[in-house]
Image 1 (tube, helix red, strand yellow):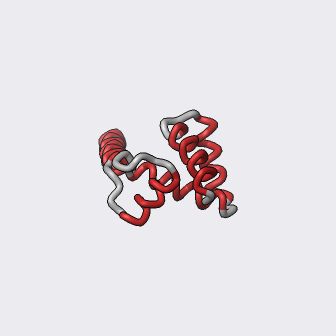
Image 2 (cartoon, rainbow, N blue to C red; image 1 turned 90 degrees about the vertical axis):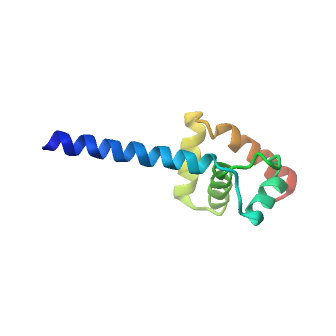
Length: 98
């Protein structure tokens, strides 16, 4: 029975990961957060939920939240998919004086 339960747990994790990826790829709908992203320099119409997550994480890190700083470092060090968004965010923050 252990193998069956393990396989079921893997299927559930895979389904959750796929759902989260779909949610992150969806266009942002919160008008206030979307306006902030555009002010920072992200192109209107290209802001998705993952962009908002990166902005939120960055703001927490700037505020001194140690876990957020560590997470940002891990994203940058890994050179993951969000690395480009982080670089774009940093440029926008400097340009918008946020």
